[in-house]
Image 1: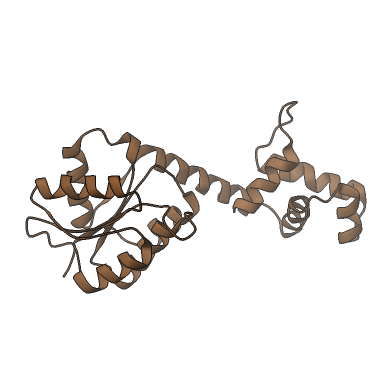
Image 2 (image 1 turned 120 degrees about the vertical axis):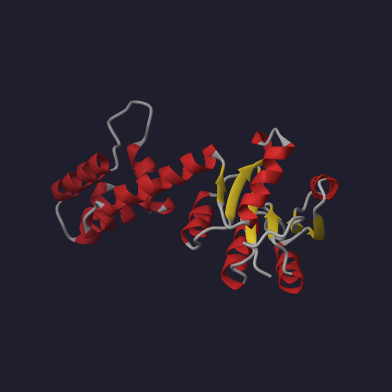
Length: 223
């Protein structure tokens, strides 16, 4: 079944480990005339349901068993890879930017990401599901902002020279300038110049409140 061909009532699979939320979504969709073909609590069960039942769209929470990290987004990626005609709507209270960026980068459409606490109108929510089922894209503004920040961070890191990336990698390991100089067999003065250039390219201006080495290290580790 191609999720981009919407025949009327939608066939929906739900993956949500919170039983009350799962039942609430099921009742909401059923009252609106749609068919919930599966309502499960983990990503593996969702993947089996999608493979067997071929819904138009899957509504997926981000954090589910066993680790409660980004299982939902990983399941969404697997669905878009193996069943590209099935739309996926991530519906969560969390924004996992790295996995979300990978999900949206790897598909041409039929994907959405909405935050639970920002969906105030059931009609709008149902329309978002329909749009994803038709092959469209639906994004919460907060998710867009986070993804743009990820993009800007990646652009900034791409401006670093190979040597600067080596220095930043050692900063992320907690090395001092002297230790970096010894590791790379360069003078401490050269290290200081590299560090200053890294801070400038990452837009880290001097501040009494921020530890620029820590912030730079975090940017590197998140890239």
